Amino acid sequence: MRIENIGEFGLIERLTKLIPIKDQDVIVGFGDDCSCVKVDKKLLLFTNDIQVENVHFIKHLQDPKDIGWKLISVNVSDVLACGGIPRWAQVSLGLPKNLEYQFIEDVYLGIRQALDYYQFYVIGGNVSSSKQIVLDLFLVGETQRFLSRKDAQEGDWVYMYGYTGLSKAGLELLLMGKSSYEDFEKRLIESFTRPVIDLEFRQFLHKNAKACIDISDGLVADLGHIANQSRKKIVIFKDRLPIHRDLTAYCKKYKKDPYQYILYGGEDYIPAFSSSKDLNRNKVFKIGKVEEGQGVYLKTGTKLQNLKPQGFEHF
Ligand code: MG
Ligand code: MG
Figure 1 (cartoon, rainbow, N blue to C red):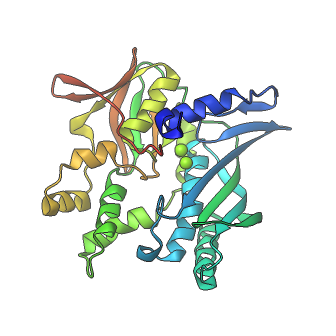
Figure 2: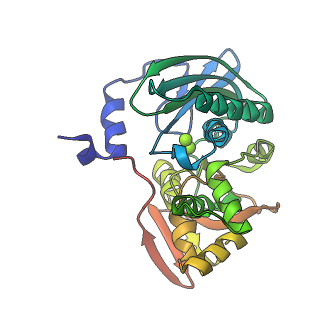
Figure 3: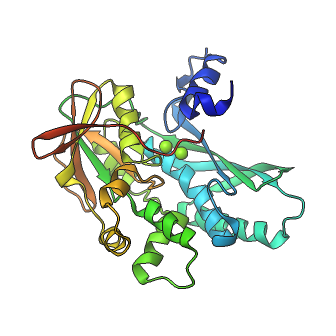
């Protein structure tokens, strides 16, 4: 049997079963955006996310500073999704022997920019030779309350903070390798190459969110994680899904269906969450509802359609 036949989530399920956790200080283990450990009265969050050449980034098409920035941001996104702030990190590098030094120095300048922006430190790391460039960050955060994927309740509204689909459009534009881009195209590319996480939003999540996740695999796939783990059904209202004007321009120019991007595009790195409250805040969009049942559905008028996740899977 090969890994490609098991799939990413099947693989994780098999492997984690082999190493059961028997430690009362572990509040949350595998299966959420971060794991969580109680130390004295503090809740520490642990997460790691890797950036692999030709899987997550394409060396000759991206600025190495952006690659460093993104390595930090994707991890900060997971910490925010659990309600925390980032505190300390370690970097592991796998580098080909013939890689030019300037490249990795520029990656580190991008890491430095992101650390200054999010206000925390990389305090250690590890290096190995490897066939392709591998950048892995291990990040520790802290929080007063852990926001999990499990806590959506019947009757909650589903919200997201920001727009989805921009990053997928940005990646497609990047891969076109054009010599010049329109302004809206440059902005879309930047949502893929240089995601920015709004840590200030954490207070709002603490006050209002029950279940929370960051959208990295795609809206449907990630709401599917909340639905599964909360043992509930999530209904998305199609007419409430926000379409960013840059995505509208992209879909018009290249004759694409924006909902394919909004529902299934990944790497948006924005929080999606459930709340019993009626929330009103800039860029917070009420996009659905939590009901008894299971799965993710799209409601168009009175029609209800079951959606299967088409998010990114590694195998
Ligand atoms: Mg996540
Ligand atoms: Mg992640």
